[in-house]
Image 1: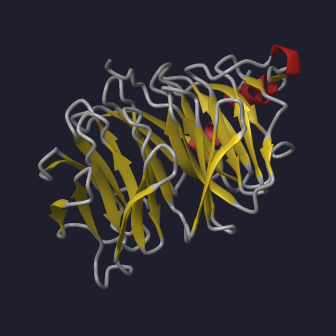
Image 2: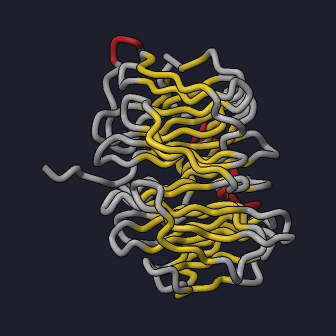
Length: 326
């Protein structure tokens, strides 16, 4: 059986969890963000929770806290950031979130960073604003829970001026600015163990890894418009998606461990990737086919969430591999 047929067959393996069987958050669970107005949870056992979170106008990104199972969701059309408990009850709503592009949660204190069209904001676990910084265009954020610092990409204006990468302190202070070598960075992922960051420069056709001090240690160039990068917090490997239909698994030192031609697994356009650090599995969003596919750590398809369930998938939130130190 071909890999394409295998994945279609595996669609039938998705089971719907009955209300009685539904429990709380478990490592390996994933939340699928559907811009059609809903958040769908898929358990680590590949079962769909029938109790979707709905009522959104256009949810775009989300983040889950492994410490308590709470979920933050940014709604672009409604311009709000909403916090839900593990039981899916609303705990907080923050207004004035203009064109959110990313969320990054710190599991140590429950605080959340939000990247927006023209700035970055940080909120505590209750939703109280700690600070807001303007002048950053189409910001993407990635917080390091080890020290509370946050890597931020500023897309610039299509190279005029070019974009840059910043590292901010927990209080919003500017620790580093890397303003050379990037065209239009739109995406960042942190590896907490060493504080390094992987940056996606789509217009520059490359992905760059920076060490904790902002020095370039890896450059993967000649990529055809990379769309996303995700880092496994357990081992430091990274997964990269590209516009020409490739998925790359890369070692911490920049060596390509695995390359997947997406058409061989039924994916047309991999816009987004997320890594479940607990299991090593990878979630991929295909915007053309309106589907979400889960791969194991070796890139073998495991399940497919088809277009019959999703309208406009945009993001998959999985809890980072993190144990809060007591």
